[in-house]
Amino acid sequence: MSEKVRVRFAPSPTGPLHIGGLRTALFNYLFARKHGGDFLLRIEDTDQARYVEGAEQYIIDALHWCGISYDEGVGKSGAYAPYRQSERKEIYRQYAEELLRKGKAYYAFDTTEELEFLRKNCEEKGETFIYNWHNRKQLNNSLSLSEEEVNQRLNNNQEFVIRFKMPQEILQMHDIIRGEVTIDTKILDDKVLFKSDGMPTYHLANIVDDHLMKITHVIRGEEWLPSMALHVLLYRAFGWKAPLFAHLPLILKPVGNGKLSKRDGDKMGFPVFPLLWIDPETKNISRGYREDGYLPEALINFLALLGWNAGGEKEIFSKEELIQLFDLDRIHKAGARFDIEKIKWFNHYYLQQKSDDFLTEEYLKILTEKNVSVQRATAQKIVHLIKERATFVTDFWELSSFFFVAPTTFDEKTIKKQWKAESPQIITDVIAILSNLSDFSSENTEKSVKQYIADHNLGFGQVMPLIRLALVGEMKGPHIFDIVEIIGKEQTLTRLQYILQTFS
Ligand code: GLU
Image (cartoon, rainbow, N blue to C red; front, top):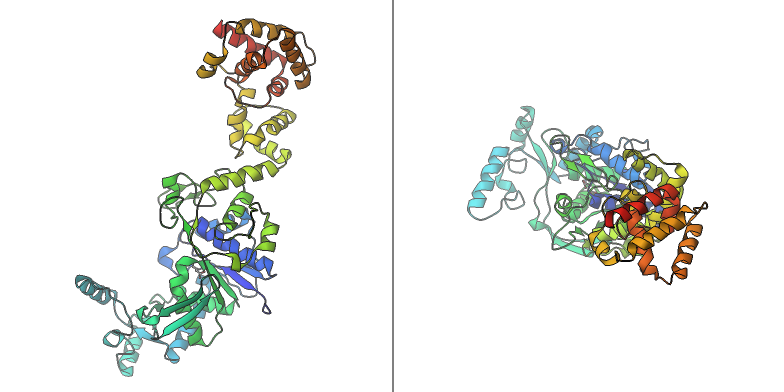
C-alpha cells in the first residue's frame, strides 16, 4: 500500500452505539494501526429528524472506554476539521450543484403529498413506487419541465430536492470481503442527494467527506452494501477515485435467524450497548457492558473475533496482538453469531489477569456499599482467594459474604448428608483443639485438625464438611483453613458453637 491508509468511523448520533457499530469502529482502528495509518471519527448528523441528544457524547465515551483512540475527529483537531457534518453544511451544496451542471443530477419539485399519492396508487396495484429512469420524465423535475419553468420555480423559492440521475447499466464493483459484486442499476432509484431543508442526505455528505478527508478504505457494516452502487457511481460522476470498500458481516442473534437488534438485549437478558444508556425522552434504561461489570479488554477481544479470525486456535489476543495480526482478508462474509457465554469466558480470563491491587480497590468499593469495613490487607487476601471463581468483580460479594456475615441457616441437603450421630462430638473436639491454639494461621489450624483426624481414626469426609458448613453455611468457598485464618479465632469458635447448638 503506497498511499497512507486513512479510515473513518462515521456513526450517526441517532441513539446509543450498538455493539455492531463498536465492532466497525474497532476494525477500522485495528486496520489503521496495523498499517500506520490514520483513524478518524466523523459524526454524520445531517438527518436532523433522527438526531438524539447525548448520542454523540455516548459514542465518544464508548470509544474512550474501549481504548479505541482516534487521530482526528469530533472533540479533536485535525487538518480536515470540522468533523461534524452539521458544521460542514455549506460545503455540500456546491457539490450537489456540480452534479447538476454535469447533468448527473436534477432538481425535483414533487411534493410529499404527490409522492405519497403515487406510492398509494402503486400499492393498490400491488406494485412499489420507485422514482427512477422509468418514470422520471413524467414527474415534476428539471428533466421533464422546461428550463424556463424550472428557473421560475427556483426563483419563486418553490421547495425542491436534488436527485441523482441513476444511470442504467450492469455495474461491477469490488468489495474486499465479498469479492466481485454485480448489480443491474435499473432496479435502483434516483436517490435524493440534497433536501429542501438545505441539508445533504447521508449519501452525498458521506462521499463528499470521504473524498475531502482522503479516506482510502471504507470499512462499514453489511447494511450499507445496498448503498455501495450509488456511492461508486457518485465517485464516478464527480470524477473522483473511489476508496476501497469492505462490508463487514452481520452480527446474528444468539439463536435463530436474523441480525442482533437493539431490542434483543432486553429480550435475551444481556447488553447490546457498550455503556448504560438512558433514553433522553422515554427515560428507558438500556444496560451496558461497562455497568454490567465487563472489562473493556474482554469486550474488545470478543468483538475482534466476531467476523474475523487469526487463523489458528488461539482466542486470547491483547490489543497489540490484534493490531499486529489484523487484516481485512481474514474477515468472512457469513454472519457472525453472538454468544454471550463467550464474552463471559473472556471476562473471566481478563479478570484473572488484573492485579490483586486493582481488584482489591474494586472490592473495597463493593464492601463500602455493603457497609462492611475491613482492613485493606484482609480485603486483598480475600480477593486472592476468591477471584478464580469470579467472572465479574460484582461476583465478589456473593463469593465472599460469609467472611463478614455468619451463616444463620445451613444448606438442608448437606446437613442431611453430613450431620451424623458422631457429629456433635466431632464439633466439640474441634472447638476444644482450636481454643487451645494461639497461632491461628491457616497452616497451623490445618495441621492441628488433621492431627486430630489421624489420632481418632476418622475420615476427612466426617470432619471437613462439618467445619465448612459451620463457617459458610453451604459447601462452597475457598480452602477451609484460609477462611479460618481470615475470620479469626473468636468468629471461628462462635460459628462452630452455633451449628452445634442448632443441631444438637
Ligand atoms: N452514518 C452512517 C452510519 O450511521 C455511516 C455509514 C458509512 O460508514 O458509510 O452508519
